[in-house]
View 1 (cartoon, rainbow, N blue to C red):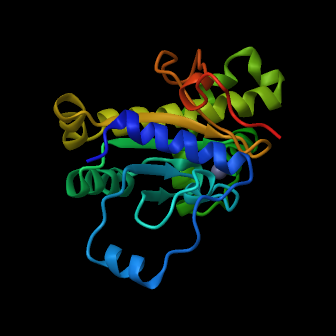
View 2 (cartoon, rainbow, N blue to C red):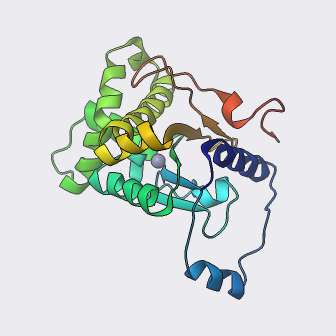
Length: 227
Ligand SMILES: [Zn+2]
């Protein structure tokens, strides 16, 4: 079992390589695939957005067998996402869960549009995603942020990550027990489409307000490699 600090270190290092345009390994060989076929021990679980620009394995420069990845538009948490995290945490002993949001997320933009102009024709399936993002956006629309769309989207993206983190931490007895007794950690993070940098959030903001990113967590001392 990979401890949480080491798992975070691996992700930090991998993201620094990604930002620097480096790749640490070639595609797996036939023998490596055969070895993995016998079993897996992913060191982190990543719940990320389906956005084509944010594949977890690439932005963290990881290979086959390293990450247990769940992707859904808007990185929202529904029962199947909770169940997937429960499965990986219980089955493989994975102790780090990262909810990975990203800048300019289409699910956030779609939710803002929906709140501005409710559409009657929206499919119930798409609505199920918008409805899960909605609380994070609605609380911010009640503040002065409503006059600044760019800042609103940025804050709503982070609030949405926080909401998913909160849901995973408190929406499952299995995960609550793993957190309380077995060192499971659920952390929020944001990927910047513009820079390629992943920033972890600190734990003090709560959902929907006072969100503060802590670059130190993913980019200690030296800071991220920027180009
Ligand atoms: Zn997205």
